[in-house]
Image (cartoon, rainbow, N blue to C red):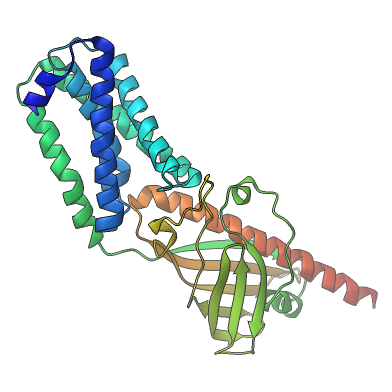
Length: 325
């Protein structure tokens, strides 16, 4: 690494671009190894690699060369921009996933630049060793992350419906085509429900909740009409269709977000209305969990609300027709 630093051009502009180019190439190689060889979307990818993209060009450029904090964070963000452009152009990732990861990536790229700046300001002779150690730490972390047990999470959304239990139940079990969504989140490629059909009745019946990317196949495990419907998820489609110039089939679209089971619970309220609760149990292999859990729960809530509002509309319409008759 010291030899590499010595061979960097003395010209300010050339030295900057060379430091950025070297960092981009290394970051791309680390990402390809992490995604396709190790099969992990985690801290190594979303935290350590962006940190490296801030740290490495700052040290390469700044050792034995004047550098400011502004230079450090600008080089890091430019490195990140070129890196993400590569992922988009070569169909490794789509625009939506990159946008979702951007806050985390920008934060740690900025932190990496600050740490890199602090290192070069001290003029330590071990700066190159720090970069090499960190370089080896990224794939090691990915290997360790791969064996971490996933946590089962639940998301509950509820709505009050001006209809009796039986009327709501009929609209829960299966429902007709939903209207085109107005929510921005569903216009970005995130999968959303279209309708639901059921084959049979009672425990063992198969419910099909059809999304824009395919169908959730849901064997019924509890059928307590008209108060509780529970089901497992036997099959599920991709959670989104990426926005890209190409047809992207990124690994994270398969088995990295897993819906395990769900339920609809109906409760009669004192005013005669029905409280309808929808619950989804899920886990994902994407880390850091605290960050991606926030995204997952927001999207699941939006999906729940889309379904619950549709059920509410149909159930209240059915009740109105019955009252007229």
